Image (cartoon, rainbow over all chains, first blue to last red; front, top):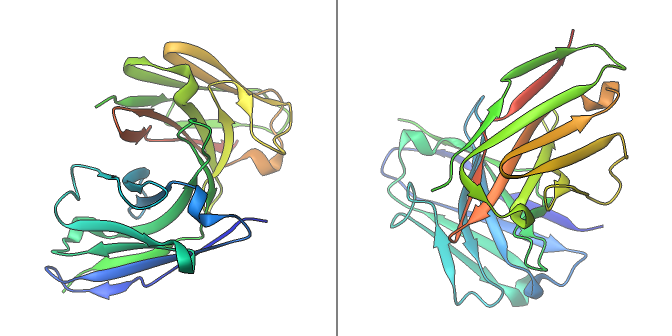
Length: 120
Length: 108
């Protein structure tokens, strides 16, 4: 069974930085696009960022472009999200999700999420 | 950016009843790129429907999706206790993914 396990969340002050990780297993990690999706407390889902299979192409939501960087290490089957200049509105549970491939552009597997709180 | 608007915001039903959830797009969506997800309390979302009408692996046939253009529908023909959750539609276009705001289906 495909597994995605996020880590790295926590409490950070406004303006601070945090690096999230997502370890993938039970599938060929290097063959799939990967995403980060977040959910603020009591709110809906918001797509954050996407990376292609070899890391050569990325895209971001307008709200995080220039502050967040998505990357991956295929040798370690791990996805990352480097978050800088954090704001209170970045407070959310951050999920990593696998793009199903086959050109469908959907999220077929999700991790359990890691919470990020931006507060002084 | 395409905006997805889901209605109703909350649906109160009894087990065994039919649920009809709507997802309306601000402009036409390629049906191949329209999906539905279920999120139970305290859990991550899970894929239900992709390509507007194809069920994901393991999804029972009481759950179905339909629609095209700007109007899409998720139907649960007979609600079971495990179906009471929040449902999100999602689309892809122009290198961006967007979700609707969600419909909560609660027990009446």
